Image 1 (cartoon, helix red, strand yellow):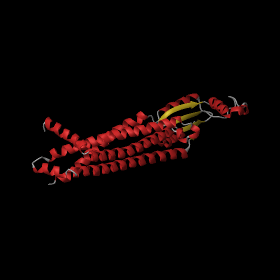
Image 2 (tube, rainbow, N blue to C red):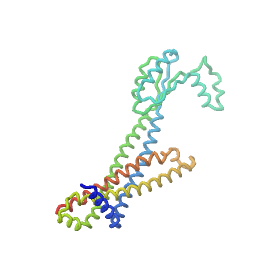
Image 3 (cartoon, rainbow, N blue to C red):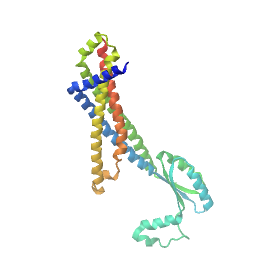
Image 4 (cartoon, helix red, strand yellow):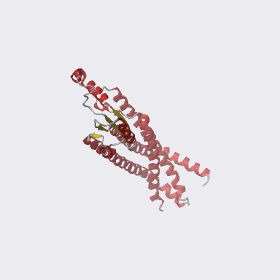
Length: 302
């Protein structure tokens, strides 16, 4: 197809958008509304995933060593622990450091611990391990218990299980909601554009009778759907960014004491809007084009 023909069809597509102002406004509004709701849900899911990820990164395993463990054995164990999968941070805490921390935690009553010193320190040497994900806990606990110098391995099983459950449930629920909203957006846009195409069915029939090919007839409508999807994506992106920016501003300005939600740090606007805007443009253009293609197909059967 010649470039001149492409230009003419693109021009006709843009012309149709502004010629049918009421139907175009309805289509753009449907797209913007559907994508706006989709964007808000995506932002909620992204922030929940971020909160869950931060909780996952706080999962710790503490390995307590026997009092007879020698320095060389401890160093050897430390090298082996570093090679294990799923460890984000490893810290060795000597018994003296543990005693100092214990005294600090007692605050004004630390004098009660003055009787403990290096010679009779009841606290053991230990390794504090931060994990990348709770899923690694069972494997690390099993490996640690296999060493003879290990006295005890401590971790909160209930907390780990709860975090794992919340993480998996949140991600599955988020994916389901996103899929449902995208499907709803396609249905709304398809029906709206179908009305627009139906209003010009006679024009399509005339073009068909005088010998125009199916794709020659389709392209202006596809261009129109693409433009409508693009407009809807831009509008919904602006609305979503404005609402999220307002929410971030209010939460950052609220005191922790009066707002429990401020305990959780919201993701910055740019980290959220880049992927959401890209998705808006992709979904808006694809859905607008697909809806136009489906809507025009039935009127080409003359």
